Image 1 (cartoon, rainbow, N blue to C red):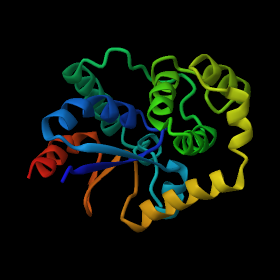
Image 2: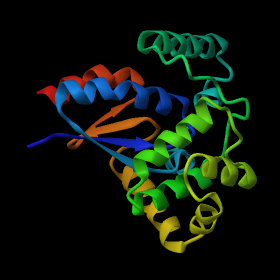
Image 3: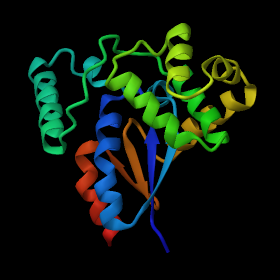
Length: 200
């Protein structure tokens, strides 16, 4: 039976970009399939009392500096030279994540993830602006105005909320998080452990 790696995902985390880009060799070596589960990171934070690192460690400059160092090391290790911090960070990802739910319903989630990650973490666009969102998604091969309409669909909103609640109930407190079966792994620095578990 093919093993499946579940990726609890939100575009708002730079580490979600980095982890996603580092996954293909792991999936190839282990023969695992990937299932991306769109969730709302803000909702996860609210439900768990967690905070983004920039807030949580705002009073610990050395910790923030080390976090940036770790990102640079990860980028160098995996040759992720297209990555850059979004100048509009933090970006509210509600539109993006509801769009992911709509794209998933259309069987285009993988294409949408690729597009959204590029727009957020390579092009540095302000993806919580409706006009920017519509234009950028249209340029990426989607119908941007139609996506804006679909993200108002109560079923789309409900599905994202359900995904987020389910993740919290399974112990998720941040993104990127991964499940292999019922085993939870948090952060891009756990990818080696994820690979060991998938290979077991």
